[in-house]
Length: 208
Length: 189
Image 1: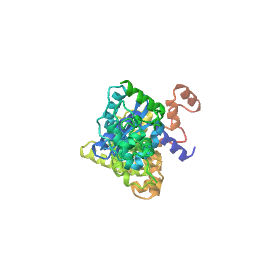
Image 2 (image 1 turned 135 degrees about the horizontal axis):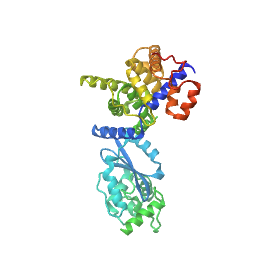
Image 3 (image 1 turned 90 degrees about the vertical axis):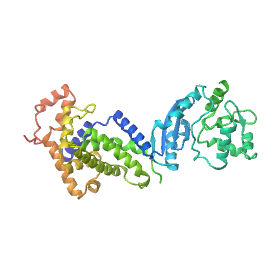
Image 4 (image 1 turned 90 degrees about the horizontal axis):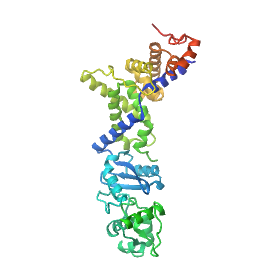
């Protein structure tokens, strides 16, 4: 055995004997998230919640909830997008999203019809933003509206396709209810979280 | 080129930075140094060039934080070298803990050279950039540190025999008496 092999062996033994267990690191990471939030450098906090429509990624800035993502959108890709578009100072920090998680849980249990936490709209702009605002205000729980109705509400009756795009790129699905927008012929239409998720949400709201 | 999220940075480098902190400080101080390191790194992260060597950058910050932590401890008259409450890592036996204790007894330059080169895997030139001096000086300090650890503690082969239990111990005794220093390492008495 050469001297450098022996040194590497020794280093490996040292490495093994230094306690960096997962639980210990998880505790340190939680402490970091809390300290970063307290010092105002946690630009984006995120967590996931398990729901009847699968795992949802929730992300919030200091201003409010900025993104909800379905598993089909690929949570890792969404997190990287948030790092690119908002800030790379992004951590798993469930505390900031406690209220959102609780209200979503109540919603999925059929016990809540509206949400009252602040939203950060920065990922949506222009006409799409106008469409989503109208959706959030004008199409209530348990109701549905056609794409053309929403286009009219948004002040551009001919912009039916643009309404479709606004819904397909909604950064805050479930909370901003693009699942309530259906086709004029009564068929369900598309959904960024998949047709099954849309059907599940509409069924939930119809039953409650 | 986009920068990866800080969450990914912590995932990728959290354990290495903690080992480096634990190698140069006691457990409580290491936790503090780790936290200070990542908090301060997070503050500066937006300004870090996207192609920077993140691990070297983190070890540089950890190095400064470790010095701060030692200074603070000294002001409180609690020498950082006195760390009686070493928590055992799962799977570590008492000899491994002896090795950690020996590591903490090394002169600072040697301890840093061993930690940053052997635990963080940074090349000697990078380590020199962090601790000052030349790459050759760092190489010598790391070699001296490793030599001291070898002199002070039994061979790794013996440790493995202990850690792996009786069967391996018996096998190892056939080659040489268990626990006795092997002839290749020159254990000083």
